[in-house]
Amino acid sequence: PLTARTNNSGHLEIGGCDVVTLVQQFGSPLYILDEESLRTACRQYRDSFQNYYKGESQVLYASKAWNCLAVCAIVASEGLGIDVASGGELYTALTAGVTPDKIYFHSNNKSREELIYASESGCTIVVDNWYELSLLVELGKNNSSESSVPIRIMLRLTPGIDCHTHEYIRTGQLDSKFGFDPNHLDELFEEINKHKSILNCVGLHAHIGSQIFERQPHRDLAQLMVKWLQNANSKGLNITELNLGGGLGITYIESDDPPSIEEWVKPICEAIEETCNTQNLPLPKLLCEPGRSLIGTTCVTAYTVGSSKKIPGIRTYIAVDGGMSDNPRPITYQSVYRAVIANKMSAPITETVTIAGKHCESGDVLIKDATLPTTEPGDILVVMGTGAYNYSMASNYNRLPRSAAVLVELGEANLILRRETYQDLVRQDCLPEKLS
Ligand code: LLP
Image 1: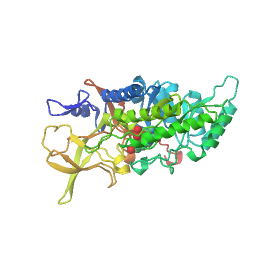
Image 2: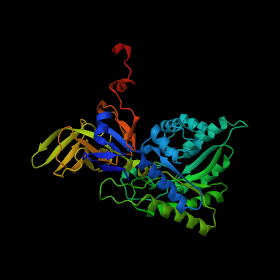
Image 3: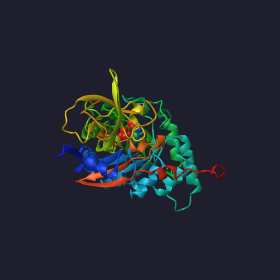
Image 4: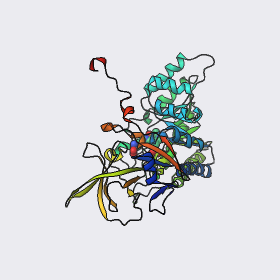
């Protein structure tokens, strides 16, 4: 959990830093990332696998949740590997110093250039589909000198396991754009077998969805994946790794009650061990790739309150200086968040208001019916739990410069993302000569 408390001035303090002071120093909106809680979450994952699994394990951070140099470096320093979902995420992870043997590359439509980049970098490619497989075989053939090493791959399969989460972030059911159809495993394994000199297929992967609170779907997945492994190896493959994806949900509002990291990991380990023991199989190396549950609750976003509008008998809008450009989740998935006023932590709760962003769009609302102390312009409103899929999905809608981010720990704040300037906004613009 966040290292947060109310200090003597009645202000919210995170990582020993007064949030009001941080905003004075770095401006708003401001992402504030609590280093200690991120490191704690990394260790909880790592230690849970070490405690509950007898075989080898490797936790990967699904960096799509928040990919930048500092986050990759912190996570890697805790011994985690990194899941990247594009050439850009791969570039960032490599630039942060993550070693390629701990990087796994996903995507349902990797380009030829991305595949070349990934295979040359030496990371593991999680192959999603037949087209990608054919591209890799072609790349491998073009590059088949005596000294060339086979490309290290895993295969992503669609498990056909449904779970209760928003339809946009559900991926396990058969009707999904991701992964090989499990009804064609025989052909798939045969094809892989034909290209052993080009492709070193070490593992199988599946991901069933995100923000999941139930534990049964991952237990079912674990059993299913051991069956796949057995099937693959009976056809001549040498699968030694299983990657069960991410998906553990987090608490955004008080009523959310997800399992703890430990409670999520334990049954997965048990299911793999039980199934392997029954089938007399050696334990595979177990991987998982959480994103949200590693970083989601470790960050908050601080905004400055500006205008308000009271519609008698209906609602009061309080507007902040960011919105759907720094946190697109409410408008995209109807996600719910909670907020506090950083400079009024000890003040009584007096009003129910709707927190609006500043974008030219009615749907740009961060929180409906937030209960807060009486707010006024200049107050610092802090939305909790914005570590996952906020910065990584941020945009420049309405040409708002992207927000800055600071890393806080033991009373020290370090900039990890510089705030964009207006000059940054036009940096990639081109004005053809005939228009200037
Ligand atoms: N592995 C794969 C292959 C994934 O596709 C994902 C998430 C993860 C791991 C990490 O899942 P997590 O542990 O974070 O649930 N933008 C949406 C979430 C999209 C998730 C995409 N894939 C949101 O803001 O809720």
